[in-house]
Image (cartoon, rainbow, N blue to C red; front, side, top):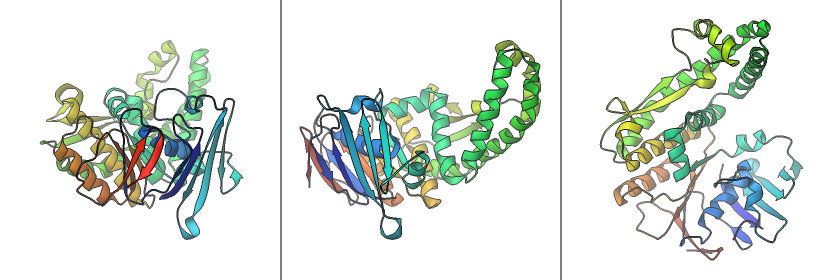
Length: 349
């Protein structure tokens, strides 16, 4: 879904913002602390409620202000809409087409947002939770039953763990439902990893890695079935007070030459691998009829000019709306709208 206009006030060091980005690639240029990341953060906040830096959204309120608000107009024709986000020191409020939202799920469904920045790159390489979060994002958009199945699995998992913590043997009553939903989730994981493999391989090659990267799924348990894994871990679960096996422990491994990227790849290669994986997910989600909005903060970090050019070309071909920040301008290999930001003020090209 394309964002047509963004308005904001009270956001960090930005002056009052009125921004009409292009439907394709948008490049925001400016010096350090000029406000580039804050522009991307305006989109992230109105679409997800999340900041791009550490801390809570409360910290994004400009010094001396008691609130911030952001409004985004999106889509066209029958799919056009308006989304607003307001954050005070004590609460936050979303409105979609002038109606208050009870759940952010409605926003996530309409405007998929995927963030690329140094923090996400390092987190994906180092933290299984970050890798799982990426997979959940993609499954939410391509698997119609994912959210319902995941919520049921999480509810059963919490109930089983609560019984385990109190040494209540009735935790076994939750095993059947946990196994059933866990197997469904594992099948979704496998379908997604299989669907991602071709675009991921193609993108790692295109981004000039020099070798082919591959992925390998860890379903969250050892052995042929989830049921057998639960039985094998039963004594350990009772001793530890939580469920050790299941899709909540699933993971994806990135490999170069058959070895994990953490062991063999430079920081630049790791960024290429993670970026190719996230672009492959964006490609899959766009193919499911939900073109995502891509927020790419500090794209140039650890990428040489040839890889940056390949990245821009890939963004243009994806036909998704993209917002890229850079310290300085450079010749671009694809059509793009360039904006400059200075001392919190945005200027069009």
